[in-house]
Amino acid sequence: MALANCALLAIILIANSATAQSTWPTRPVKIVVPFAPGGTTDILARAMAPELSKAFGQPFVVENRAGAGGNIGADVVAKSAPDGYTLLMGTVGTHGINKALYRKMAYDPQKDFAPITLVAGVPNVMIVNTEKAKAAGINNVADFIRIAKANPGKLNMASSGNGTSIHLAGELFKTMSGTYMTHFPYTGSGPALLAMVGGDMDVMFDNLPSSMQLIKSGKLKALAVTSSQRSAALPDVPTVEQAGGPALKGFEASSWFGLLAPAGTPPDIVNRVQQEVTKSLGTPAIKEKLLAQGAIPGGDTPQQFTDFINAEHRKWAQVVKASGAKVD
Image 1 (cartoon, rainbow, N blue to C red):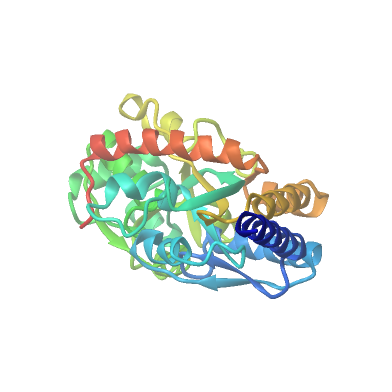
Image 2: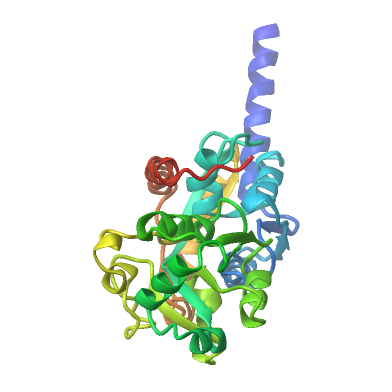
């Protein structure tokens, strides 16, 4: 009788769990963006949220939790209930770089999350303030390197936070070009771009989508893209390797963004979100919007995204070690 009761209880629990998963979501879902509003992470999350809201019949709400190179927001999600109601728009920083860069981490990017899908990959772009660059005679990467070497430590480099791809792209540039700029981390691309437009900062290696409109308006000047090939969105802008000469041969520092859930989130929920994100990324409206900003739509499976994250961690661990960058 006792065994029969245990078996019956197990069947009930499994049935209840299956029912909960099949009816998910029954209330709003939160997408945590671990950076300030205005950056590429925020742009992509807000592009996906309405599509997911329509697909699931519940609001998908974006919440910005900036700080510590994305670690604060990522840790919030890592410690959230694995019920599908708290997701993270993770980045190459939170899940590829930070584990190697930070001496202490409150979460494990490989163990504490259930990867859902890659949303988009984007190149970074080396930008300067147009008016300041004109006054200083900076027309290209070679000019920038010449002036930076003549003024070590006097040029200010903005980033979206310690440990982000924007920060590390700059560190890699400094190492390979033999230059030194003073790093100023902000809480996201939005605030950093305001400082660039205001002339407080001299250079930034920003994600292309968040800089695109400022480049097109002429407020910022794009010197180079950090990908191995030119971006279709800025075909006239060379790569860092093309513009920087032999010292920058092989330079590549692109970014990516993807959805993740806390570890232990039911696979049924993970797979359903992945399928809807992939479907949305395939629609002409979303696809054209991303491509116009220099982003390449993703949509891979949870297992493919997991393998990708593991490979990115290995890659960036080597870059961090070579650059000598460390954050307490």
